[in-house]
Image 1 (tube, rainbow, N blue to C red):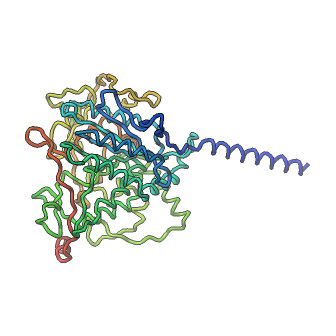
Image 2 (image 1 turned 45 degrees about the vertical axis):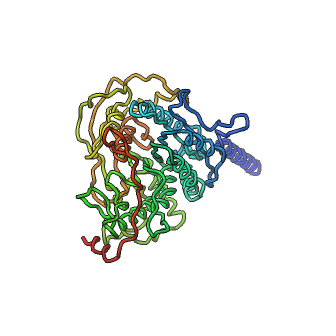
Image 3 (image 1 turned 90 degrees about the vertical axis):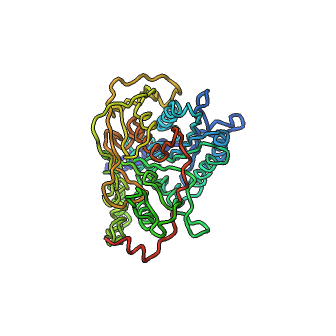
Amino acid sequence: MKTNWNTNRNALCLILVTLTLTMLLGSCASYGPYHANTAAEPSNSIRGPADGRYKMAFIEFGDQGSSLDNSQRKVALEAIHKAKRPLLFVYIHGWQNNATSSDVCRFEHFLDTVSSFPEFTGRKITVIGVYIAWRGKDLTLPGLNFLTFWSRKSAGGGIAAANSCLASIEELAVAAHEPGKDYHHTVLLGHSFGALVLGNTISHSILGANGEGGRSSSAWDMAVAFNSADSSITTRQLMSEFDYLYRYDPQKRAYVSRGNVGEETATVSENRPAMVFLQSENDSATGQIFPIGTGLINATNLHFHWQKVPVPGHPGEKVSENEFYTHTPGNNKYLVNYHVVPLGESSPPQGLRATENRAFEANIKQNHPDFSFYTSEHNDGHEGSFCRNGEYSPGEVRPPTGKELWRRWKFEYTGNARIPCWVVRVPKDIIWGHGGLWSDNSIAMLGALFRMEFPLGPGGIVAPPKPRTAPKAPDLQQLNLDKRP
């Protein structure tokens, strides 16, 4: 009797194990590429509306950072070469997304919105978006999302450490800036683990040395990370380097070289940070889940001893590096240096022609010397109706929401290192939770950052920005004087 029970129990266990393995294997997400180019469809990796006002291209990478289809980069580059006045957005998606997820639709809606505004159509600007795709989810079975945290964090780090992603971004940006183009801007965007990829990929090149003992300028103009799901170790190191090279001059409203105050190319206007981290105040994924996940990694690896490292902007202060390993940049009290603060309700400015997300147009049409900006909508998720079953219809007429709420906000320095790297806490009225980067109010804020980075000159013309070149290493004696409390 006992033998039969044991036999039946073993058989039942075997069946359960087999079913579990079958479900897990069946729920593994495909590696792709999802938008492969073929002889029959040589441009399958790019699409856009018939009028050509925007193009959206895909470049897909594997878990080890290798390109899944080299022709995808070639197709994207051809579109940039053909554009006489390109505005290039390169976006790296985050956790739980890939080359066919709903983020594709949201990014395309963003491109459609930007390309439809009179401020861009009137200047014959071609909006080009490149969607950098990777396996942001490797399991599709509902309920197992949390279990992918460690593998997807590792994959994001691997892609950032490899050469292909950075090489692709740099080549795209260089193509947008090639001679003969009288308008050219390149904006890099990253979200969640995609912000991890973005930050780690470009941080090495931001301060890259050149042959004259100085630092090289980046090929892109602007980089924004939304709700970064990366540890803040690399960000602390980047901010420490900036703090070593620059000091803030309130008279010039600029970050000036500690080594040579007269180096004009090494002076960075306050409105042109090299990197901006935007962190929603109610993002539980990075605020609660991330510390738990990294804490489990520490326990598993028996990592309990941490060295103490300097805090940027706080001479002489050192804290355990674990504070940076277990917290993302936007949730780290030692790194956050800006907050978006409310200025109250407002009225819309005159002369707006847009009917959808009018605050975006308002922010694009004017400069922001005091770093204030508008939002015009309730942050209630109404943008979700723009995508039906993951599909997007370019140019579809979308009536106004009928419930505008005009408010003004301001980017305000609130302490810690004052350097050309902003780590900003953002109210939930603008970015709701971890995935709220595509809300109308978030896009309106991004429009303000864009205009701050590229201010309007006489006649409303945007002058090409000066290269953002970091200075040479400062003289040690001068550095010690600058660092005195």
